Image (cartoon, rainbow, N blue to C red; front, side, top):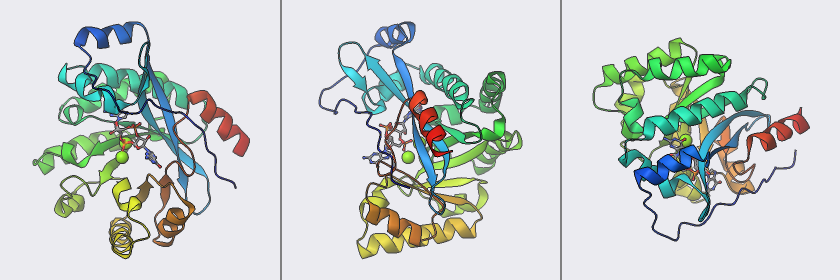
Length: 265
Ligand code: C2E
Ligand code: MG
Ligand code: MG
């Protein structure tokens, strides 16, 4: 099937922007935040198996802003939980229209550090009516603190309820293989940096090794940021399970994803 390219153009990162707490507050009140979704595709079948929820700020003066513009300010003002609650609520609601695919939401490191993580997330998801086995949370390596037992407990609490766990941007943080050995992840998202290097021999070698490791641990591998048919071909040859990237589709609105899923059914 031909790749789907949906444009959801963001303003380029060209201006310094450090919104105040009051500005972010006002953005909530005026409903300026939005969630877009980027499909995840099974390489073997070309089937859409999930979508990652990515936050946007529809700024009245600056246009559509990506998270790189404002996420840090949101965190600095202690508003990570408020934003994530909003994104999670929205994502669960939107996902109700998508039959059986999973929706993945990103967790900030401060959220993962919160012992009440599951008690916060699970009721929101349950209230939305979305079966918990259709929810995935993404954690970055840097959020995995040194206390392996505690981190594993937090992950297990979510997994026991049916939520699946993805390790985001793998290979760019402190890729601690010992931790990988002890953490029950469902999916490892291999960072775009490794895909960018293809088809260079060394990049191919590293990718092959990561995918082999992920498979040997019984987890699923997803390649992030696949942009060219050549990259897709190599990623597929390594035995990687899934991909996510502009080659297949850019992030799109919930309505666009609903239409896309219908057109492929
Ligand atoms: P991420 O979780 O690794 O998300 C993937 C990012 O890569 C997204 O950028 C996506 O648009 C971009 N991307 C996907 N495929 C391609 C490709 O083929 N080429 C290129 N050049 N880029 C691609 P985005 O939406 O700007 O998000 C950046 C980061 O912001 C995310 O990285 C995630 O860490 C964070 N983020 C986004 N939404 C949320 C949220 O709701 N909560 C939290 N805590 N973090 C979020
Ligand atoms: Mg992510
Ligand atoms: Mg990522």
